[in-house]
Length: 412
Ligand SMILES: Cc1cc2nc3c(=O)[nH]c(=O)nc-3n(C[C@H](O)[C@H](O)[C@H](O)COP(=O)(O)OP(=O)(O)OC[C@H]3O[C@@H](n4cnc5c(N)ncnc54)[C@H](O)[C@@H]3O)c2cc1C
Image 1 (tube, rainbow, N blue to C red):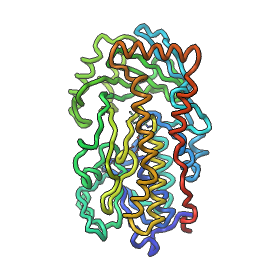
Image 2 (image 1 turned 60 degrees about the vertical axis):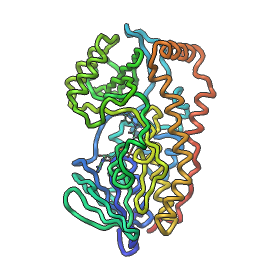
Image 3 (image 1 turned 180 degrees about the vertical axis):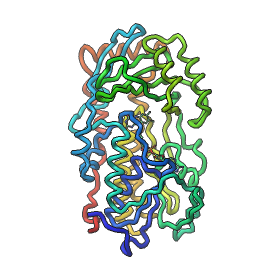
Image 4 (image 1 turned 90 degrees about the vertical axis):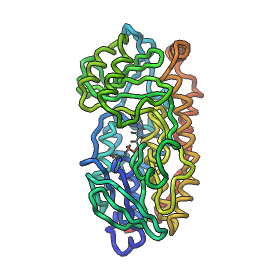
């Protein structure tokens, strides 16, 4: 049973910034170990966002230990095929997503991101985790014995520990480690993500069309009446930051995809109208350390792998489990954070590397030569399936961390 924050939680009063995946998952485990937890998020409430995410490998074990795995399995969206098409919409190859990601169906669940966020939020708000929406950390002052936090609402509070689970462009990281630039590894692409009505009659599948340096695609999540669409493009330098002028980014994307084949004109028109357009660079976060004093990072804030790895969500869940367990196992944050990093870093880095090995070449060919080479790989996959070693290697990395057992630390 979860415990109430009480005198038991003295010295264990934790603030987590970010109420998406890493934040609530860390809150869940810390609460079970007797910590008093507050989660702050700048958004008005949890974000629904419909794009599909994956929980796989070691993260399946974390979900099982949290007791949510049966619930995740009931909402599994079971994407059946990924079709690569040519300019006329004719299939070049149709493959199973598991062929790309290391097929182990018993160790994989795919679900809309917003559904996972809701499951974790519901789980933790019925515990004694306090949520504070519409607020953010403005300043932190770590004096070695605790952290004084000033919120943008003007409120001030002292915590024993602060955890940044606020994503790729983490605010907590900026406050504790400085600006993002030295930690951001740009992978040479940008993406636009938005939804449009499912007028293509697709279900449980994705369709991808590539031209050199440009990729357009749609994802039919389950039987949804909406498609999740993306228009991605290569750029040697990141052309603008995630919070760039939205009209400028629409115009630039429109210009880049002018005269595109397949359904590109339909997607560009939908992108122009979309009220849920999300733009960002494709990149990773690499930090020499994930903690500084009494402040630590978890999830994308610490080691974003980029969507090319398909592992961001799994890494967030695994990191949350190890961070909370090691904090509980060690009396003080310095030892807890060091142990968390020692255990988790090799796993996180191996998964980050998948984005460079797998996703880049198959999903983002930049030149006609790379595109031809990709089409040859797809043609081989179509006739003889993926090379078994390919999926096996990927799957080994997904499953490569043996989780420590912290059951004895659970309170109540
Ligand atoms: C287009 C796209 C496709 C993806 N596809 C996949 C996929 O197929 N498979 C997969 O596993 N992963 C995928 N991911 C990655 C996945 O979404 C992330 O890796 C995962 O959500 C990381 O979780 P997180 O909790 O660390 O951070 P996030 O989910 O980014 O959450 C950060 C939270 O912090 C909050 N926040 C931000 N700034 C502040 C602030 N200043 N103050 C307070 N709160 C703040 C935000 O509101 C948010 O709630 C994809 C991501 C994108 C963008």
